[in-house]
Image (cartoon, rainbow, N blue to C red; front, side):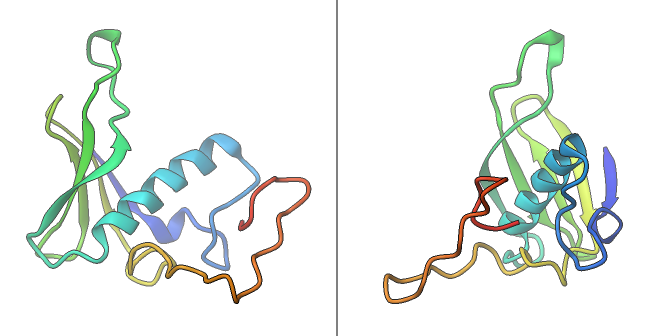
Length: 123
């Protein structure tokens, strides 16, 4: 199991780094665990739509990740299919994802501009 203090993985502004794409994917996965687990009460858990990343016997595990918030406020992600703990996330409370998904933006609001070089609305 990986023990992650997410504050060490973010840039100086608390954003997901953009300079290393492989590392960025790892940080995005942890951000998704935070987004699902942050709003939980301690000892609550939920299934996510995040695919398990393990490959037991060189075959992809077909499970989805679950998250729970521990008594110490850390977020544990694990798979009930292959029975592996993937990460224990600490330091997540002040991140942009701690309260769950962002609130919807209505049609009366202006949509965020799409970055030309990245093809994404937000970085």
